Image (cartoon, rainbow, N blue to C red):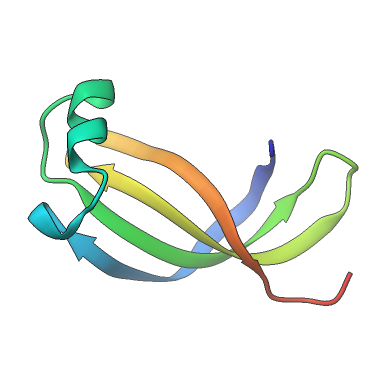
Length: 79
């Protein structure tokens, strides 16, 4: 699902790093070597139908490499 993050991601928290990241092999092949971490945070996103929703996002990032593979994990508000 395509979506756009509106504003900033708040309440960021690391939920995995180094060998604890299950997708480490994929991340290194797709985006290169780095100290990969899995993070989560809360943000407002704009969905393809134009609706604004507050969600919990999960993503991967490494030093010098931007956020990769952002995905919506949970919707935090009522539609």
